Length: 335
Image (cartoon, rainbow, N blue to C red; front, side, top):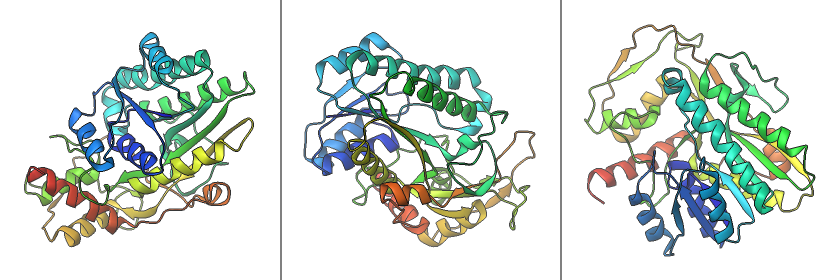
């Protein structure tokens, strides 16, 4: 059985569904801070199965210990945590408290119960630098002044320090690009908050005429002056997790990081693609200049994942937008 932390969130729910589609049993824990019970209903509808769920904040180690004691867990996929670079600059204490405390509590529970297989979802932002060709040997810039980036750097250091103390640990750290898309049937996807933290849900609100326009920073050193990002379909991310678990189960003692990335596109180009897919006008306005740093380019060729995990992205940005737009329309129509 696989424990998925944050399993009712956008990424976690798709990973859970993908694991079940492979015949794997899962148990989900989530504190519902970025999710709701409707996702559990959609998971059970899509899978046709009962999905064990425990509402728990994984920072509560005694409560998490009970989950490990109740279920025969052989591996953990850690998706829980806060993930917005912009929001973290406004709420640094919340990000450090949530992200760093979560991993420490989780690792303590895993140590206590003898579970030593872990897939941790990190981000390409962990490198703290701009590049379209990041690889796992790229030096991590620990002086990058963003709380989310620093919290992920801390998490990876905590994982590595824990790994060296116990020869039974088997750990894969997946550094993901920007996640988008939805499950193909339009039943499962990202529930869009009134004030989205990610760019694509924000643009889809404009397409759905729930928002007047998109504000874009246009001061980047790129051809169209907007930042460039690697976008990854959520189902490709789920496939990477499954490939990592299969690989881990064949290893003896390992802690490896893998860049997991997809198509590279600028924010200006993303607006044009959303307009083409949705057949809607997407008005753009230049954002008010700010002193907050923004990584200009963030992408990777994912060569190590291809060589070691036999994984590579299958879906392009158009497919991500199509799937996410279908899900969003279904939600707006009460489906």
